[in-house]
Structures are given as C-alpha cells and as structure tokens.
Amino acid sequence: MRWITVLVCSVALAGGVASAAAHAKPVKASSSTNATHLTLPPVPRELLPKTLAGWVAIAPPAKLAEAAQADPANAASLREYDFTGAAVAAYKRDGETLKLRALRFHDASGAYGAYTFYRQSGWPREEIGTGATSDHNRVLFWVGNTVVDANFSHIGAMSAAELRELAGRLPAPEGGAALAPPILANLPKANLAGQTTHYALGPAGYAGGGGVLPPELVGFDRGAEAVTASYTLRSGPATLTIIDYPTPQLAAAQETRIRSYIDAGKQAKQAQVAWPKPLQDSDLASLEVRRSGPLVALVSGDAIPEESHSLLATVHYEPNLMSIPQPTESEIAKTGKLLMGIAGLVIIGAGAAILLGIFLGGFRALYRVARGKPASSVYDTEFISLHLRD
Image (cartoon, rainbow, N blue to C red; front, side, top):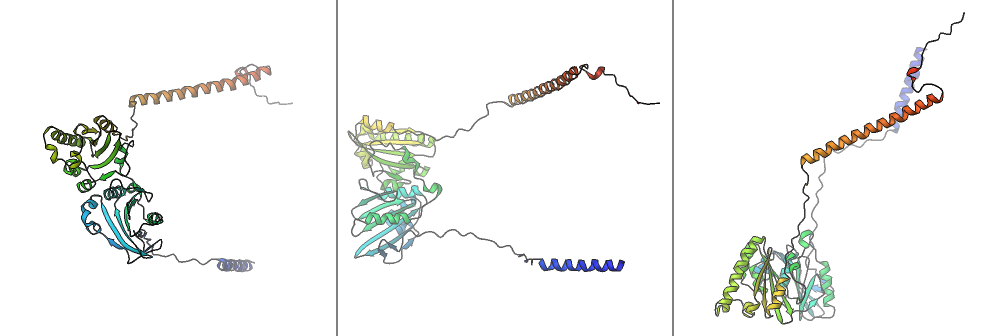
C-alpha cells in the first residue's frame, strides 16, 4: 500500500507541473539599458514667408544678424532697443512689387520703441497688428517683439488685409517679453494727440524720436527710459516728457540738473540759442519741471502757463506695493492663549464627566428605589446560601 500511495502522488505531482508549464506565459527579458529622451526646442518660425496672399518672393528671405545690416543709418538706435535679428525680402505679383523688412527685438518694449522711432508724428493710424501707421505707399506696424516695414509699389484696397495676414503669422513672445513699457501708463490720456508718442531707451533713439532735452542730460547711462508725447490744449500745443529712473534718489538728482539747465536758459540773455530747437520754440513761462517718485516730467510748448502746469500736475507716480502681514501679538501672549485654551478644555471635560456620572448614577438609584430597595447598594446584605437538604 505504501508503494501504491507513493506512485499515485508522484503521478499527480508530475501532471500538475506539466499543466503549470503549459499555461505559463513567456516572460520578456527586460532591457538592461536606460534610454535617454531628449526634448528639442521648437523650430523657430520664419519672420517672413516665401509667399503671401499671391506675393511671391524673388529670392528666399535674407536673415540679418547685425543692426548695421538691417539699417546702417540707425544701427545705434536699434541696438539701444535690444535688436536681435532681422529678415528682408522682395516680392512680385502682377507687375507690382513689395519690399518687407522685419526687425526682431528682445521684448515688446524694444519693438514698440523702434516702431515709435520710425513713425513720424502725424502719420495716420492703421488697424494692423498691435499698432500701425502709413505714409503713402509705406506701412509700418508692430506686433509682439517684431516691427515690420512694408513698402508697396502701389497701395491697393487689400494691402491692409494682406499685412494683417502677415501679422497673424509672426511668432509671439511669452511671459514678460510680451508686455508693453510700463512708463506708458503714466501718460495722461486727456488731450493726448494720437500717433505722437515716442519711447526711448538710449540717446540715439531719444534724439531721433524728437526728444526735447539734450540726450546727455536725460541720464540714459543711469538706466533711465523716456517717453515723449504731444497734447492739444485749448491755448496751443504742448509736449510732455516723462523720464523714469530706477530709484527716486536718481530721479531727484537728475531733476536738479534738468531744473538748473532750464533756469539758466531762462535767466541768461540769448542763452536759449544753445537749447535744442523744441526748447527754443517754447514759451519760457510754460517750461516747468516736476518730480513724482522715480519720475521726472517736463512740459514745453506754446500753451499758456496755466494749462501747461495743469498738464504737468496730472503726472503722478503710483507705486504698486504688496502688503506683507506682520505679527501683532508677542510670543508671551500666544503662550497665555494656549494655556487658557488647555485649561478650558480640561474644565469642559471634567464637567462632562460629572454630568455623565450624575446621569448614570441617578438613573440607577431611581431604578432601585422603584423596586423597593435602598438607593445605594451599600446597604445590601449579601450572604451565601448552600441550599443543603437532609
């Protein structure tokens, strides 16, 4: 019997092993090498296309890396606006020609500054991109951090729509690079003449954009940026210049220099001939300088002093401050509150225990009295009865 039992168990075990092997799934060998995935940056989009609304480029658009290649006469101004690259191309369509020049800058502030540098005051406004203007067959617009200068052999009814299509193709910056210059928010909106704002980040751009003061007096080497705009007042035109400095201390020092320069020209006879032409053409009584925080403002022009000074008074710096909550209680007061809280919890717990004891004990006492027994079981006589019988 023992051998028969061993034989049966051996057969059953062998069958189980074979069945398990038949149903087992093959195991794939794991790879011993760890693959490294590289994420490549997106391919930058071209500034200018080869075809645009029927316009076909005569040659592939040329890429320019230097400001002197993009605009030799104004290379210094482009570098002040943080020029990063450009593209130029010539197009043909039905016997007409179109020349495009796209200038790329580090951020939207540089693009806006370059746009105001090339745009002359009084050019009509166009609805292309973020801002646009035109002068006969020339159209200038900016969007994001790009400025496009278009010159048509003949302006047609669809020219603006074709440039809007181009504006929609241009790559857009992200984050802080897409923000316009914050200094523009300090310009008063009332009586502001359209298409007269000029934004400068350096002396070349300031002088080329019709700056009122000598560029060396502004203090661009100290991190200043300036904006100039014309205003149409009832008594005459006025020009408002706002200069933004990194700190109020720098602004106070530059305000003293500018005020001394203006006062010296007012007091000395024939001294104003050394002034820039915008100051020479201004009413001396209307010239005034004022500081508000890191901003220094100057008003000039032919308006009467009362209106000029009112315009200057509207320039006010509003700092954007974020309040940080400060502790209003000492550590001793906090510790006292903690101890009082603990004592309160102990009192509440003790009171709850007493009430619970009274409730449970009183109910038991009432139950005993109802059965004719004493309220407490202390008085109960307990004995042991064996119940023995003879």
